[in-house]
Image (cartoon, rainbow, N blue to C red):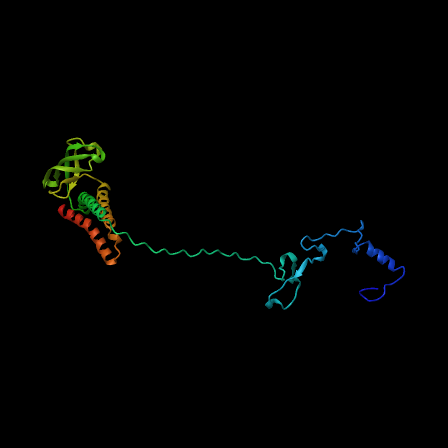
Length: 273
């Protein structure tokens, strides 16, 4: 009797092979026989399907405003179309934006050091005094306040920057004569005692006769005044005037630091008149 259908088992020669097949073992699916004469089919490695089964060209999905008429140009190779039908396009490169830099709050300026500021004030004031003293004479000569004449060398010591010469200055038309004056700008071949050179002085009360010619006489006062201005700026910086937090006090301190060397220069100009 069959358990599934509740029917008696069939008898006859047809039942014998079934029992023998069941006795032989579990059922095996029939396998296709390979014929050597069959043509081998190329299989696509990604899908496992035959290459001929995959379409070469597929329709392109157009935007809504271009879906009016279907033309042959709406088909493209399968390699140039996405899975949803949209064509491949060059994606614009995104620019990597740098994160905004964190703003670090400025540090408060350090208070000035009184001993260092006092030392800088004294040293720079002395330098400004020296440069102002050696610059006022050439400055008066440059603006035309001078007396022409000749100077006779009486003594020369040293060479180059260490050269020191003295002589006797005789003004034009014998207006005045000054002995023992310092002579500046003496050429190398005119340092012999008794040499006579054209020179200029600011007046009979001057202590230096200038024998410079050309651009040398202008270079003296220009470099000297530039050094005076540099000393004034150094005083404002190293004394702490520029580091004051209050704007009004800082302006006043800077003006006072600049006014000191400039007043010294004006005093020397008045004395050398």
